[in-house]
Length: 349
Image (cartoon, rainbow, N blue to C red):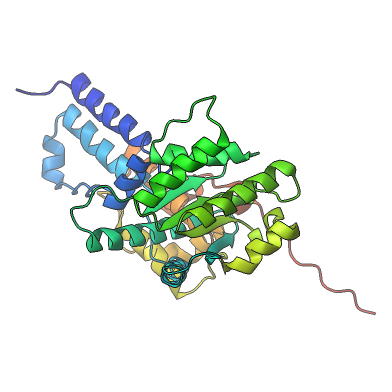
């Protein structure tokens, strides 16, 4: 029995929609992330490619498009440093009763902050699974993001949403917090990842209440807290007395754009190895590593976006290769596209 083209495409779209709904901020989505992405499809031979029916070719290309749409995580020096620092703090906090130390990951957008903390979380959870095999009721890692203009209730609700706890309109803060703390304690949570923490401002009443709520969670949940956000060193998160308390308890790991050097060249080479294109000459992307550095301004996020976008276009337009022209056609973020102003020379007398 053969599958008709409409049925095949309908199945593929259903699977794609289901994948989109599995976010890191839910326990189901986080566990799928821990289990890792599916195996990439294999490139077929030119002969097999010609023998494919339109439906088969469509599904084959859809699998390759989905592969290139996935964000590749590369073990950069920054990711490795974050994992090592986070792992050290988890060990130091193991027997702490109060005043546990935390980690702050700070930097510009597109420098890999979220990738770094989620890889820390993945490392921690895989280690926990290895130590406690065949035990399914443990939740060693929580991952939430702080909404813009967040209130304390909104942040508490994010914790509850990750754990799958119902938050009813009439639920008060105490009920939500007690439910979250109870589940985290029972399931042995050991690491709490809080992304977009720059949305917390200590100079506003709502922001101060969010900060107090996170601090209360950190005191009640026996876990190491990790914050990630944009330019935290100069943000309002560290303003005032509350900010001073955070600064005194959290280790800061800054991230910066990559300089042009061996690590950048390695990043380009690693990303090129993941391409699933039929006519892409191996090594041709590596030859463009300096151009890619200038184009992406050293940002790993912009680099990944450019290469994956050009690969997707190469499948859609049938060229099956990533070229400089194809990379030029991919619009990047405004920061990467904005020409840098030359520094003014100091006036001489």
